[in-house]
Length: 215
Image (cartoon, rainbow, N blue to C red; front, side, top):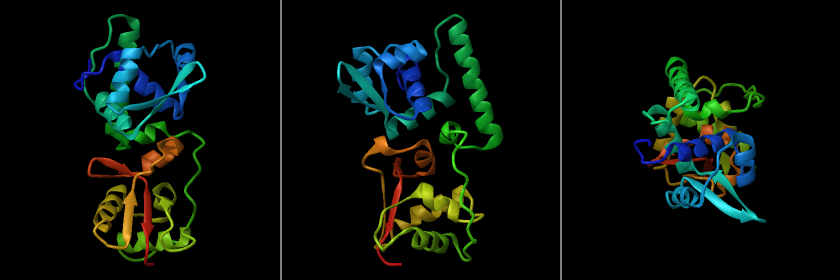
């Protein structure tokens, strides 16, 4: 088990859902990955709000939640007890490889799940000024009108050479500005891996959308 108390099978299910990046049904879990999500584990993962399951036809389909992504990240960087045998050894070796990649490259955990054909960042003229000014200018380019909700996955590429840390600090500071709102996407099923990776963590929650009432 992991430090969170999840079984190896439950962590495996979270990893599969992360790799898939979309809903997956029980039969497909077993067919593609050879893992079965039994009732007890399904209910446990739902109770912990790590996945969302719904009945479609005769099968349950599952999708990873924001909390599930965070739990998976914690599991990957922690020591996990794997079953004995070649399969368990392979899993531990791959997890060690992932940790090494994250350490060496400085990449975020969610970036590992971006598709290879993810669109390149649009080329934009860099906005002068501090990061908050750049965010406002980028928002103005993307929004049809003040108050429109803009996903951070669209906004981040327009911020020039500002680092991820600088942008996150600026976004966290902007939540105290009355005309600025930064919220989670309520329909998490619509989130792509790119959108999840672009989120800013505020109050231990992923925030995906920004609206500015006064430009």
